Amino acid sequence: MFKKLLIVFVLILVGSKGVFAQTATDSAKAAVVPTLSPKEQSKLQKKIRDSIWLLTHIPQKATRRSAMIPGWGQAYNREYWKIPLVYGILGIPAATYVYNNSFYKKTKFAYEALFKAQSGDSSDIAAIDPELRGLSIGSMQNYRNAFRRDRDYSILWFILAWGLQVVDATVFGHLRHFDVSNSLSMQIQPQLNPATRTPGLSFQFTVKEKSKKPLAIAR
Image (cartoon, rainbow, N blue to C red):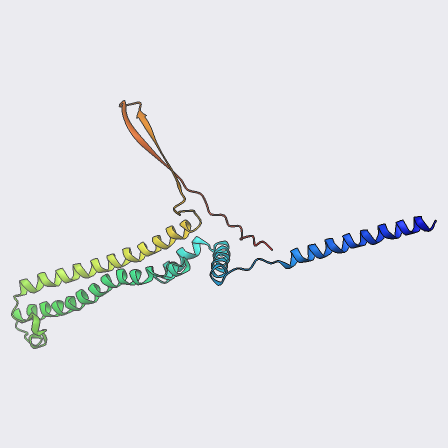
């Protein structure tokens, strides 16, 4: 009887040691946490931010914002380098409008002053801009019409430039949701035109939509 109890005690002791050893091993494994370098941590944080931003990015917002304020849509798409270009493109027709409108007003006043002078009223001749004095009434009329035409063209070009930056924000807002990286697949294969019996090459690009799932972080 004593021998049996001794055997049971030994078995219990050995089993408890195995359990404690396994628990200690599991605890040691759990305590080993892979550490990342500061550079790797920065890259991981950037990927997380980009993933969250992609989830909340709506291309229609880029369209509406660029339509209200030039460059706002580009800022929403995180294409900040385009904002100076947007205002540079808009600034050219704006500057030409100011210039042409100023000279249009001057030539218009000068033409009307010369026209009245032909009827004997020379009261406005002295108020003509010094740069325009000495021109005939016919030349003044031509200059007036040219500056008015160029002023109207400046307005048209300003509207077109505004619309162009809206289109840019819209297109690139949608492209943000598609994979346009260097890993895109392209297939080139020979092709025969059945109508003309002439050989050629066909190009096939595969563009896939970016996944909007957030990044899974292993723990």
